Length: 200
Image (cartoon, rainbow, N blue to C red; front, side):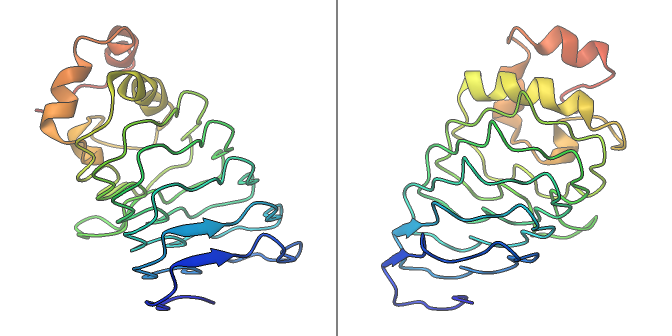
């Protein structure tokens, strides 16, 4: 809808009626100068696809999607890819039980859910269930700022992705320096007990 609107700096779509929306693919994709997006009030109850929604929104510093209903979503491919100024994402209440795509196809150099979120520090994925995740290419590529607390929640999330192979942080494109930090975290023993390793 707003994809490629490169001159927008502020966008308030909080009043949009989205009750019957099923696809949000690329809605704000490549809105390169957009620093403020107000999507509060979005009804996403029927949405099944959220591919590249905010991909390429390089200027956005904060994004509140904490109340989005993702229980019917199957595709999160590239949703935050390239949101390079965002430091915190509250996704703790997202239901990802039905998501199959959190990254691109094998061999793709794009499509990761958090790909190139280079300043992202704070996320909590401890309540995520990745039981149906099959595509994971570039998931955490470039996520070099994740805090130890955030990494500790990822160690809880990873073992739920039972369909993935190999079961390594490297396979979900976690930067090596961040993966190495994980070995000293409290959830690392549970992570390895589930058959996962750093892969580095």
